[in-house]
Image (cartoon, rainbow, N blue to C red):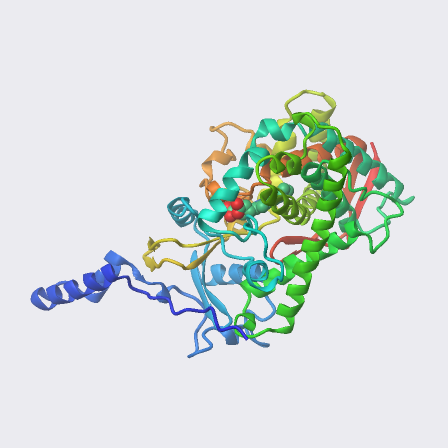
Amino acid sequence: MRTSKLKPVSYLTKVNKNFIRNAAVNSAATAKVTEETIKTIQGKSWQEIPGPSSLPIIGQLHHFLPGGELHNATSFEFAKKMILKYGPITRLETLGIPPVIFLGDPESTAQILHGDNWLPIRPGFESLDYYRTNYKKNKSSEHYGLLTDHGEKWKKFRSKVNPALLQPKTIKLYSSVLDEVARDMINRLKSVRGEDNMIKTSFDVEMNLWSLESVGVIALGDRLNCFDPNLPEDSPAKKLINVVHEVLILAEELDFRPNLWRIFSTPKFKRAMKVYEEQEDLAKYFVNKTMEKFKSKNVTNDEEKSVLEKLLEIDENIAHVMATDMLFAGVDTTSNTITAILYLLATNPEKQGKLREELKSQQEKRPYLRACIKESLRMLPVVSGNARKTTKDYNILGYTIPKNMLIVFQHEIMSRMETHFPRPHEYIPERWLVGKEDPLYYGNAHPFAHNPFGFGVRSCIGRRIAELEIETFLARLIQNFKIEWFGPPLRIKRTSLNYTLPPYNFIFKDV
Ligand code: HEM
């Protein structure tokens, strides 16, 4: 059995204690400095941040039990409920999870993200980290990957992979192969479309097959053949898709909701360890298969090289770990994003028409296409928030936030605020294109109200890849189909990611 990782947080630093002592002496002498004055200068304790009522030992846990206001809520749902009820800074402190502060204020978000931009620590994936660093048997690897590594180890890894994954020039080289994947996917959609122009297979699985094939071809340089009509349910590709999904669900339940796995092995913890191992083995299966092919391949020129090939020249261990993580982080993210975009375009036919006109014009730059994607990420982002573990003390909205505190920035809530984005619940891609004089101009929003790919040196390393994949596929979809939607709105389940849920009432008519 493991011992608890929950450690008492020291609320006051040495400096603060000295300050209080001095202030108390002064106060006795002059009777002018009150406790309130001290709090105003140094900030109230983070434990005074508003939040649901607390009981001794269990903290706010009773709110999560049946009958409690947060019962069965996912981390996003309870954060939203709390921000609406208690304001832009609110606190969760309960048995089974380290204390968390939720922020719905862009300026405070900026303060922490800027302040922590040297070696930022993004909490979450704590159970995956436990699997990688403690649980798994074969720990030969020096690096465990960007999702779970921190400090100098993370920095060394990130600086080696940044050029291969983030340079726009390098990523653009994958345009034609991604277009090939997109065209194949269009053919597949046509083949699984019924007479009523609806997709007969599971739409979410179709989008996952597209995203895995797309990220696979960039990571490994080879087609995984996800679109094979005879792909069996127990094929490695289908298994990988299912396992990625389960990893993300379990990670949210273990890392962001009250759960006792930090104290003893709960059934969910045991399941997670099994699933993490399966994901790793499946990704390794694809990496090893590609490595075998490399052996028999003639040397490829730089333009044709996959991320794996490029990284192998730098560091073999890093190459394997990065390719494995791409097959994990690059699947559900892009698939749920494209589904959300299609839904918003289907329910806003005039915007869809405008986009089709831009695509017909064959112009090289496609600003409306990009604006449609940006506006979807604002309204239905696949990642609803971001997180940091503070590396120093902060004074935020009048409260002292100590080092090592978990902060969650609620971007989905902030990017739907009227103050930042006028008419926030309307799909208006134009807001990303109009000039300063227009009240809709996106630049009027606080720059930290909307952050779909995160911030700074730790921001999403797959951003450029994701954008290119989505732009390429979306363009092909709109060129081929007039997409409609009927019935009730698309449902979203918010866990580690925002998952779109069936029924997918899309109609794909030929253009
Ligand atoms: C629409 C698609 C995507 C969205 C919205 C998205 C969003 C994000 C966000 C918000 C973060 C956290 C950034 C931070 O802490 O500041 C992140 C990190 C990350 N993403 Fe993505 N992502 C997407 C697609 C991808 C793809 C396609 C890949 C792989 C090729 C990927 C790989 C990663 C990795 C490895 C990290 C960790 C980076 C680090 O800690 O250094 N993502 N992503």
